[in-house]
Image (cartoon, rainbow over all chains, first blue to last red; front, side):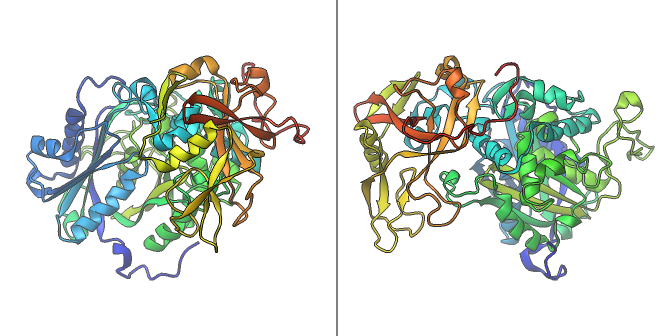
Length: 420
Length: 178
């Protein structure tokens, strides 16, 4: 899959931008505060992480589904004078896309350093699963062809894609359940994770059915939280506190044909990653075999599997084998979602998986390992649960990571980073 | 403006939404129609209603009657309903039925895959027993649920005249009796 593009070339702004700071709030159900307060908290944590003052940030971007607070309020609160801001509609796959747009804004001379944030009370206000107020809105226009059929929530919308993959390739519930099992192992070593309990395949396939083929434990957690990261150019990136995570390539909101209703253009068990891979690996100048750690969006167990398959981490149709083989477990060849992801850590539309990979690249993942006198983690690489003497979730010697963002089967984004 | 209450939801077709107005008027007439591109070099039929041709970008089209029979291409089966009025109807099926018309055209994996719920021949939501009889490969015909003047929703029921597979493909795990 490696392309023949010269990795030293300046094309696609490869390696010229970096993430210098990351931050988040506590993952809760019932934050007891506004998305404005949550967002301010996450951005301040990212600023403190980078050691960057408000005076050196002049750009801000966010995304939401009318469930957040926009940049001007947060910038004002934090004393950040903006040369550029943009708040867009969107959920999953927006994180990577906005990082790409932040690079473009800086490259265009519109600003120099950009905060990207997502702030949401995804459990206590606008429930991401669609229950509550969202379930009772009037139905009109194009939604007459979907919501009117009780085809409304993310799980309901995606289920024909997931079901068809089982039909086409013989993928089993037990194989897919391993995504949750492995992410729960990772979450057990993440002090921030909302669900830290390790689960088994039996736990997943015996949990109650939500929407076939999705059991309760195939679905992600709904949480209240905000997340933030800071993007700047490489010529500035080394002025701050951390080893930068340098951006090798990005692709944003890449779509399958007929995105108005993508089921018209099959195979419907193929997802947007099929198209993204041609952009992202060209832009980054490498291929999936070079990736050491993935962050494959896990709104559902199936979403991680389908993406890993269509990006080329395994042959088409072999996603069930890939996710159940142990490759993506800590200690395996290519761990996935080492924070526990959306299935266990918390739900924040992909931002937390980018934050996790930034920390992986620094070698400073915030697990249960001891900290030395200089404040650096002394990782043990023992991935057993803390109670069994483990508690580590750092991938050894990780140099290159990839995020696989997901909005829906037909739309996704990606980000490849390297250790600075 | 066609508007009506349906399963606790207010369904509305705006007067300026010409494409959906015509589509749902045909459904209200129980006479399934879709848009056919008027470009002589194209002539492809599209679903759902849209404002141009996804294959040639042509804006001109004609409404044409379409034989609304087909095969279940995939499905979801909702056991935990989100919208309140669907709760008492769970488990219910969301079907994607691939019409015989224009299947595999213009390329192998393209088709008209029309959404709807599984209903019985009278248009009532399927019972749990009926749900278990339908899967990928089942042969279906369209049924309309009347909502208001100018507005009916297309649904799917087993085609009594169709040749049904011995065992349509169903999700391989039955959990807790469901």
